[in-house]
Image (cartoon, rainbow over all chains, first blue to last red; front, side, top):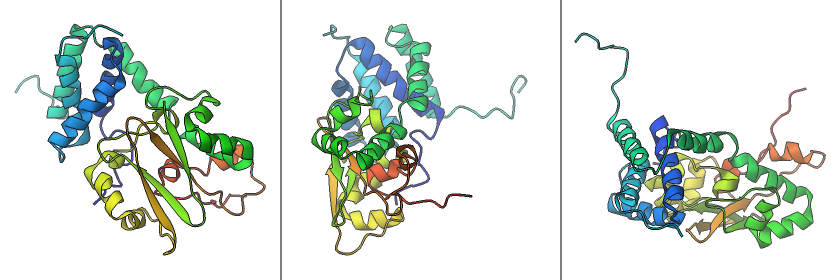
Amino acid sequence: MIDRDADEPFTAPWQARAFAMAVVAAERMGVDWDEFRDRLKAAIAARPDQPYYESWLDALEDLTAEPSPSPR
Amino acid sequence: MSGSHHHIRPKTPQELRTAALETVLIEKGLASTDAIDAVIDAFQNEIGPRNGARMIARAWVDPAYRERLLADGAAAAAEFGYGGMEGEHIRCVENTPGVHNVIVCTLCSCYPWPILGIPPVWYKSPPYRSRVVREPRAVLAEFGLELPEGTEIRVWDSSADLRYIVLPMRPEGTEGMSEEDLAGLVTRDCMIGVAVPRVRAVAG
């Protein structure tokens, strides 16, 4: 069933923080947002049933674990 | 245990993990508390579905704007000053008496942020992402939207390259309404396509 009660962008404060951390980190790394988006897709595909923002954290850890590429 | 406060809830694993990652990112120079707070604040207070609703209302009252919106959604958003991340390429799809549109991102959560904000959690959940493609009519019914049998339902799968917004039909009985009041009828769900605008009873 679709959980229509989960009607907000975030259902807990840590989710908003995780969201914003990715936006800030991608900007500071000078990487295109698609670099994060691609990792998010892969994280969701790897664990389709885990809550969305846990996949978001997986993607953010993956993006920021690597050495920073030079800003474009 | 002395010093513990029974009324303070222990942090969840997700909260602990997020806090730990924030610390690491700050140490690496990839984030700061202020920058994170600023992004949260922007999405709570400036960037949200009211932006899209203003565009829809404009399209209802201004045929020339409607044409521009259908031709290039991102350019039509830019006319209002809306743009930025996840808003580079937007296609507006128009509901008609015979066709109803609904948007999804089957692979993750692509969504036109500058005009709709951050999507609700259900939009990002596996049941919506898979079922709206397979059985859109049943999903819309769960949202309380019963469409006539003859209405064609088109499901648009968003991607990194193209995001969608639905242009709903202007409800009957709104001929005398101002553009601002019309925008008030356009909910986020109307622009996702899981609802249609309704004229609410206006108190005296």
